[in-house]
Image (cartoon, rainbow, N blue to C red; front, top):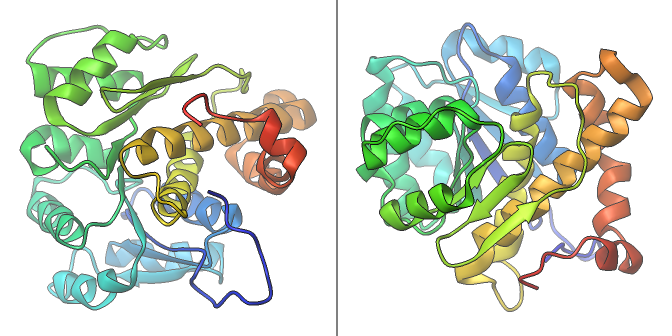
Length: 299
């Protein structure tokens, strides 16, 4: 599903991605997701953030298209202008947790669904989703990416059951969530468990023992790109797209983490992971030999 790079491609054909996230307090998370999507192979990446986060995120990279509108009266008008041009969406990195933003998030999700766009719901996006799981229920092009604590909260919101947070995901619980709301879930942990309720994949390769913040943002940004490629493949992967794209992004994130840790050890940060994204991607997916090395069992 990885598109071959040729001189016949036009700008945008390999993916136009939108990241909805970024607030006064959190500007790194949307940047990590956005720059990871860009370096994974997307052509254009937009960041829709709160007004006070805009200039900060712009200062991180001139490569990103930043819309500092989410907490303004112009938010939905801006979304309506740009969203029809987008191929895949991430909702949540650095979004913050404000009840006043709930209606905006719900409106954006409804517009994403109306356009039939793949969507990754991550981080603070999951907090909003827990307030009303029905906003995403039954939307098969959605992939939720909870960590241990977020998965525990998701189980409480969807199944009304208490489970302790665990770094060792329970595949049965993941499948139960998938079947309850009919989406794909990528539960991150010591082993990443990715399931749509019918197919379940485990990504077990070594990552990094250094648990610096931001690695999940790299995962969500690259996942959005893989989702677009999966649905745009010839033939499209359709019902299995979320699981295959989720596995591909998890495998890539773990490869980046492993390689960065070898180089930087205890000093590893997410910036280091992004710095090795190209060689990790090229080793796994950039050549026929790499494609044979990293193959999801569904394929």
